[in-house]
Length: 303
Image (cartoon, rainbow, N blue to C red):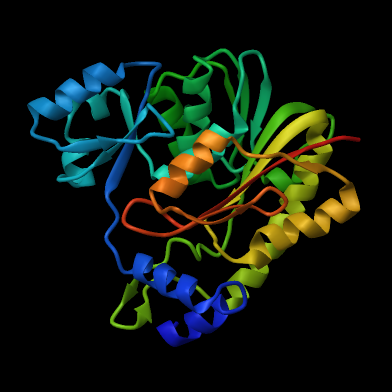
């Protein structure tokens, strides 16, 4: 796809100034970020290893367990013992946000509907110190194997992996909380080089993604207990895949959209990462050198 065509797609949702910032973000190289896996190590231990290896980093105000690496690439970090031992996990900052918003608690029964490769699943386990029950779903055999590998490597204990399409989960399941990080067009993670979008991206992909997202959402809602909470997220910044879907289903299903934590929103805003946040429409993250473009919303089933 040509840059010009992408701009036309973005015009549906954004003004000229916002489009320019988004396009700039697509052309920037993103810093590596990681999450300390508190099931196996401590932040102090990881910081000492980074310092010993001349790795410069910065902390993340809205998430103490996250670090941004300023002067090394993924290959270098993967060579460190703390990575090999599962004490850290390489994960984009944006993809950490949905689990923070989900706010998993001990003893809760939690569903991760599209779990591979396991970043968010293992983050849920770490935040609850292995004291919640997680069902992680992945239909692709190879991706499910990667999910299993990461779960084992990072020391999770109370996880059941289901190798199937989450749209066809048995409706006898009931969950306290559900994370639906849905397959999407990837419009928030695009790379532009010399006026050309390098990623596979098209209007057809947007349409196909939207169909799958709605099917997954409807299944998730059936599996969520009354007063239970669900986080829906995508690495897309297009309204068609995000808040338009939320608003349409809210009219039909009558769920409540939950206000996000002020400290999180303030922290993201100060880093220039927020395109837009409205309680009724969710949070849209700006693609830049620190963040992928992302969408997050939290809902509560009230009936």
